[in-house]
Image (tube, rainbow over all chains, first blue to last red; front, side):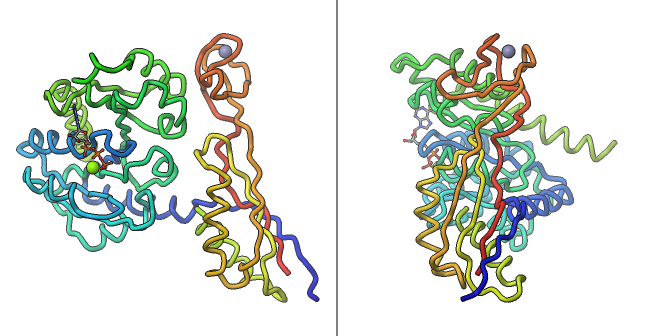
Length: 226
Length: 111
Ligand SMILES: Nc1nc2c(ncn2[C@@H]2O[C@H](COP(=O)(O)OP(=O)(O)OP(=O)(O)O)[C@@H](O)[C@H]2O)c(=O)[nH]1
Ligand SMILES: [Mg+2]
Ligand SMILES: [Zn+2]
């Protein structure tokens, strides 16, 4: 029988992921590109919003889309149809992208010239919040069919994001979703969050969203020139 | 997540002389991490046989309550879901989180 030994320590469980995310960020910065991590519950409208975004912004910026899905390439195909350059990551059993998957992508795909990398994370409001990818901006989509209490139920993701996009707003007349209350619920957790109210179906509210993205790309370019 | 925990434990085991088994791993998990302990334990139990010396290892998880300073009145309070994370005194929102974002391995028992 061996002696038992208690090893006291303090090690961050996600240190491995965080370090790799840092490494990815360095790659992004070397490439002068802005990376945006787009997260939401399944079916909140990430791919639909990206279709609209790519259609509008592609003439202006060199865009690349990174698609994270557990299985299949349906979303990647949808985005290719609107002319996007897409790389698909099948996460398999993992319900979120992680920094390692993005690092592998970065080491295989030449991204020279790309200005905006839009990353569609796996549909899930829980795990993606904890796994940084190295992104510059974190965006959460909340569709109006999900309920304005979702920020209270999933505080972590709403606290750690830079912007929230309310999607499917064409459905507002049919659902009990109070945008003001939802914004209020988010601001309790995240004072400086930006919010957008859009419908990918009716193409409303997209101008503000697109300009925000455009501005982030512009700011990056400006910071390099100065 | 379970993977990361077991990797830390395996590394510790490999670097500690005269031990060949991990009997327990102690972790702390902040309330402001969307981590469901039961799901984590389930995943942990499923994959632990894949890590040398960990096949019967226990996961002991302690949840750390969130404490925050209020953005409005600077009072320290426990933001909770029941009050939508608002300050009980002035109704303002969460400023700095003092605790609640932990996600650490704090101890490993080896044999
Ligand atoms: N009414 C309405 N429906 C929408 C809108 N945007 C998306 N949808 C519908 O919502 C469903 C899901 O949209 P997706 O864009 O595939 O959502 P997603 O978040 O990419 O889904 P996952 O990748 O599977 O998590 C589809 O049936 C879309 O047609 C919108 O603005 N209004
Ligand atoms: Mg999608
Ligand atoms: Zn207060």
